[in-house]
Length: 75
Image (tube, rainbow, N blue to C red):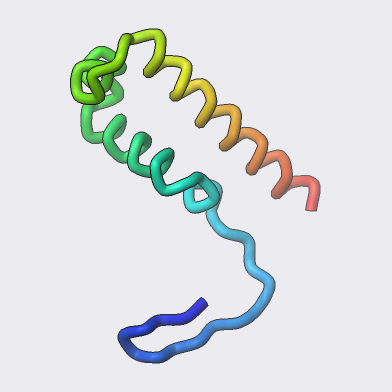
């Protein structure tokens, strides 16, 4: 890791928190979901998508998080 602001370098073998292992768009989805108080209906309106599409996206993210957690426990 490197900070461009203060030129600090951190090297080593570290596990990222599971949320940080998600892609940037998936992290944004989770942030928006939390900010909408967990309302899939509100998320669907905000994103201009159908409720089932938003539900499927959330299910995909949950599956990713479960895999990341499982991978962490296996190492």
